[in-house]
Structures are given as structure tokens and as C-alpha cells.
Amino acid sequence: MPTPVLLENPLRQGLSSGRTAPPCSLVIYGASGDLTVRKLVPALFELYEKHLLPVSFNLIGISRSVISDEDFRKKLKDFLAKAKPQFSEAVWNSFSQNFHYIAGGYDDFKVYQALSARLDELDEKNGTMGNRIFYLSTPPNVFEVIISNLGAAGLAKEDKGFSRVVIEKPFGHDLESAKELNVKVREVFKEHQIYRIDHYLGKETVQNFLVMRFANSIFEPIWNRRHVDHIQITASEDLGVGTRAGYYESAGILRDMFQNHLFQVMCLIAMEPPVTFEANAIRDEKLKILQAIRPFDEHSVKHLAVRGQYGPGFLAGQKVPGYREEEGVNPKSNTPTYAAIKIFLDTWRWHGVPFLLRSAKRLPKRTTEAAIQFKEPPNLLFKNNLNTLTPNVLIIRIQPDEGITLKFDTKVPGMTMEGRTVNMDFRYGTSFAEGTSEAYERLLLDCMLGDATLFIRGDEAEAAWAALMPVIHHWETTEPETPFPNYEAGTWGPVEADNMLERPWRHWRKV
Ligand SMILES: NC(=O)c1ccc[n+]([C@@H]2O[C@H](COP(=O)([O-])OP(=O)(O)OC[C@H]3O[C@@H](n4cnc5c(N)ncnc54)[C@H](OP(=O)(O)O)[C@@H]3O)[C@@H](O)[C@H]2O)c1
Image 1 (cartoon, helix red, strand yellow):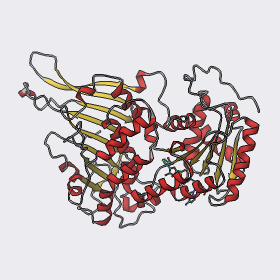
Image 2 (cartoon, rainbow, N blue to C red; image 1 turned 90 degrees about the vertical axis):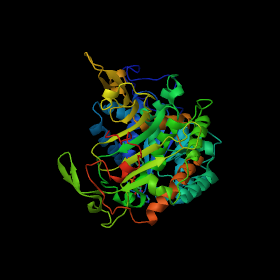
Image 3 (cartoon, helix red, strand yellow; image 1 turned 180 degrees about the horizontal axis):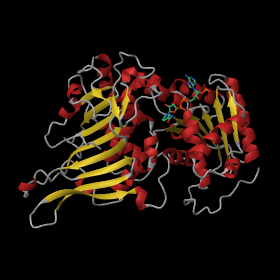
Image 4 (cartoon, helix red, strand yellow; image 1 turned 120 degrees about the vertical axis):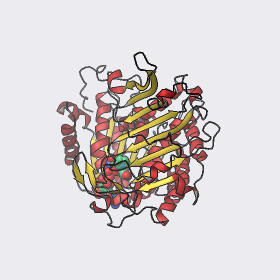
């Protein structure tokens, strides 16, 4: 085996304590695609530079496109060389020496036999000890066929080393298909081998919900219905549907953002402290939150959920088309690009506290954050300042400008008792020397290490679908309450969303 290029100063590169992954082979299905080039391989390269990737590591890309090993490596390298400011050709050559590509159909059993033989050969040659990860980075319509062929080729067995399967989102299109997919995957792999990915959980700031809540004692006493007025979770995008119309037309905003990302963030905010910091203990608590979502019915969904679709408008001074004018979109499409949902959790901790979840395309800004708004003091003494004092809000910014802000009221210097709301700020960018890692870096490493904490368990995926299905069903079987498009690109969404807040002191944050 050729000697890998060692980086100059491993400590400066952020070498972390004891988390180097064991020897293994990573097989990526859909390797000719966007995710492999833009996210997976750059994440592996970062891990390699940080000395977190095992010295014995093979990558095999598989997809139908006919490309040589050389062309496969070149495509990956070209992207990285452009995207990475201090790209080193020497490090790349060392990193990619065990990269291979197999062209073949996902339903062609011979390809799986060839893969099995190649993996055995690479184990022998590079010392990867029979440890395998199969990463499904294809559209979901081929997940099942890949999984059943992996099983038939004996590649799910763990007799020599570990065998794990990573399944990209979306995990199912609805509750029924998620259940069916769970059944199919479990016919071949056991739950401990299955890693359902939601890349939001790989984000540093999302993991920080756990540290912030459970490593500090000041938050727990106020983290409940007695002190919290409501919680807003927002994921807004300024972009439109772009090139994803084919997928988006059949998915819409609820499937794309709520069933996975927003529900996961809600779980981390709302869950009870787990008994240990272990995958199943944490996932048990998240599952309880999903199961505690008060079920929507035909009546409540009309009051608790608002949908929208962007029309033409302006963003950053540029005229942008409406959703129905985007390439690949049905000109009469009723696919929602905006959703706001008020969720109640039937638990002792959160009884009566609305969780306001909102996500949309073509809003004025790209932001993801959670804002915990606390109740007003029971007796406000400063009656003259009612317009300048606001309730306390704890804002956890997931992206961009990652950090935490606490809004609180303070006295303005001077001879009068004038109050004003100010910010206390923590920013990842200025508080730490090292930058935050890309989500896929963390998730790929965790999978190699066998740590499923940041992956979705099968019952969680089903519970999330079960909670959301009545809203999806209602929206797919009825006309929008206000005809689409009902908000202009570059604005904060349909006015109906304001009415769902019910109380005069509640406002959607203009993040
Ligand atoms: N891109 C992202 O940022 C992102 C983010 C989150 C999740 N995901 C998920 O990750 C997966 C891969 O994403 P991607 O952006 O890389 O997708 P992609 O480029 O559309 O697909 C990946 C590869 O799958 C193969 N493929 C495409 N359509 C197929 C079809 N109908 N039947 C069989 N094979 C097909 C293609 O390879 P061949 O034609 O060569 O076989 C393609 O290169 C998807 O499930 C996506 O939802 C992506």
C-alpha cells in the first residue's frame, strides 16, 4: 500500500481526540451525482486532512453513467480544486489513491457480485478488514432495489466486519411508503446497521441544542409552559425552486422541510433530558415528542396550518419569476412553497405552548433559527415604556451567522427610567478559533464509528410522517383557501399566517 501524504502539522489541522475511524470501504450509489461531488467527497477530504479518516480507506462509486476510475477522480478533484481555497494536489493524490468506480444498473445483480469481489480484493490489499458502508445517494425510487440486491449478494452480513447502510432523504413519500421502506430495509439490515440521514442533525448548531440544554443548569427551570410563551422555528430561503422542480412538484414544502429538518429541531428543543448520551436514549426522547404532537383533523388543520406559493416579485433589486413560471413547474401548480404550522405538544412540559414552525422559498432572507419567546413579567412596572420593552427571546441561529442571542430589557442611560431591548450575543465565528464543520463530515465520521445518535431511527421517521399526513392530505385534496400565488417573492409570506398567532404580542420574526 503506498504511504499516505502526512500533513505538516496535524495538531494545527484540528486533530481531534480519539475519533479516527476504523479501516473501512465506503460504497456510494449514485456517485455520478451532485451530492457525491459537492458534499460527500469534500467532507471526506476534510476528514482526511484532519487525520480522522482511517489510513486504510477505499471509496467505490457506483452509478449507471459510464466513467473510468480516472475520470471519476478527475471530476471530484476538479470540483474540490475550485471550491477549496488551499487545495493541495499532493494531499489529494494521497487521499484519492484508493478511489474506484463501477458503472452499472442498480438492478443488475452482476454488478453486486462484481462489487463483492472487488471489496474482498481491496480488504486483502489495503487492510480494510471487511468493514463496509453502503451510502445510497440516489433518488429514492432505487433505494429498495439496491438494498435487496445488497442482501442477495451477502453484503449486509457482518461476519467479517461491520456492514452499514446510509439512506439519504427523503425517507418515504408519505407514511405508507416510509413503513414499506422500513420493512424492506429491515428484511436485509438490522436496525443497528441502518443510518437514515437528516443532514440538519450534522450541523454544529443543531447539536448545540443538546449541549446548551443539558450542560447548563440555568435553562432547565425556565424551559417549560410556565415561562415560555411560544417557540418559533424558521427555515427561510431566498432562492426559488431552481433546478429541483421535478422533485419539488411532487414533494412540496411539507415533505421537503417539515417531516425531517424542522421536526428534528423541534424534538431537540422539546425533548426531556435523556438518561444517557447514547443513540437510543436520545432517539427514545425525540420519538416521544413526535408522538406527543396533537393530531390534526379536517377542522383543526384549517386554523393551525397556512399554505402559500410565491408569485413574481423582487429580491435584492432583481425581478424574479413566480413559482408557476419556473422551468419544469405546472403553470397551474398548487404545490405549496410556504407553510406555517402551529403545533401543540400534549406533554406536561409543553401543554398549551404553541410551536410555530415556518419554512418557505423566496422569502427576503436565507435563515434557519429557533426562537424561544418567554412570557412577560406578571406585573409590568414600567408602564411608560410599553412600546420599547419586549418579552425576552432566546434565539438560536442555525445558519448563517451561527450563534445564540438573548434579547432582554435594560435601562437607557440618563435621568429617566427609560427601558429598551438589547442583545447578548454569542457567535461561533468569533468565539472559537476553529470553524464549524460541514454536516456531512460529522455524519460520515459518526457512521464509520458506529455512532447513530445523529441519525433518524425507523420509528421516528414513521412518527414524523404520521403527525404530518393529515395536513399533507388536506392540502392535496382541497383547493388553497386563497388562490395561489398568494405571496410575492421577496416578502414574508401570506398574510393569513399572521392570523394564526392569535395573541397581539405574538409576531412572526422578520429574521
Ligand atoms: N444534493 C443535495 O444537496 C442533497 C441534499 C439532501 C439530500 N439529497 C438526497 O441525496 C440523494 C442524491 O442527491 P443528488 O443531488 O446527488 O441527486 P442526483 O444528482 O439527482 O442523483 C444522483 C445519481 O443518481 C442517479 N439517478 C438519477 N436519477 C435516477 C433515476 N431516476 N433512477 C436511477 N438513478 C438515478 C444518477 O446517476 P446515474 O444516472 O449515473 O446512475 C445521479 O447521478 C437524493 O436522494 C437527494 O434527495 C441531496
